[in-house]
Image 1 (cartoon, one colour):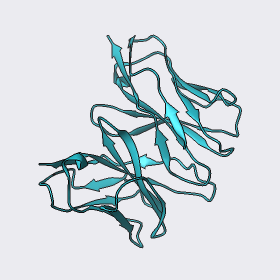
Image 2 (image 1 turned 45 degrees about the vertical axis):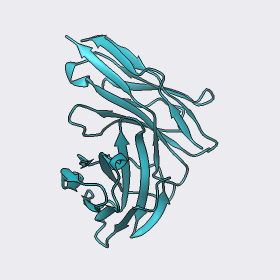
Image 3 (image 1 turned 120 degrees about the vertical axis):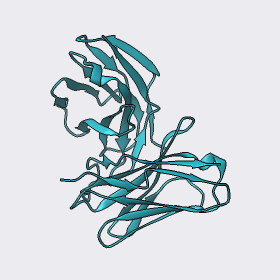
Image 4 (image 1 turned 30 degrees about the vertical axis):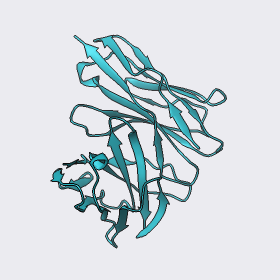
Length: 115
Length: 114
């Protein structure tokens, strides 16, 4: 079974631009979560989607948004990029269950650099 | 707010020896799950082991095992017969009840020396 895929793998943008990152979950997985990883803040939860609905949201400004499609693929968008948005963005998918706690499987990440 | 603390920023071990990585967490939930993930230099996050909080038995996966102390809110990872390929950042993480959201510790950088 193919793993979680993320595109693009690397991205360079300038301040003020916007960016869209894509994530395709493992086949059959219905939940997709996004995380931001930086040297200073570590791994921080952005949001989680299940059946096209945002189920959880982390403490990030409204410039960060996401969505999930009917095939469970997900995109996240960052508008008006700032230097501090430079990070590794990780997507993870899981089967999900009502009680939560299903194992999340991570993609290889998208390395975003904002100049 | 749920927190996860890894008190050892860096550790090293000789090949074939045993090493234990520490993790403590703070939660008010009764239903939660605990994980150890490793992130090698490739940056790919890989699941090492998963523990369900309602199970008293410690999880094991080949050379990896945990010491889960629920009352102390402690969840340490033991790696036996360390191999060079175990060199990586190790992250402890927990979920909240009814959610897939993971709260991560800051990580422990483990180096296995030949």
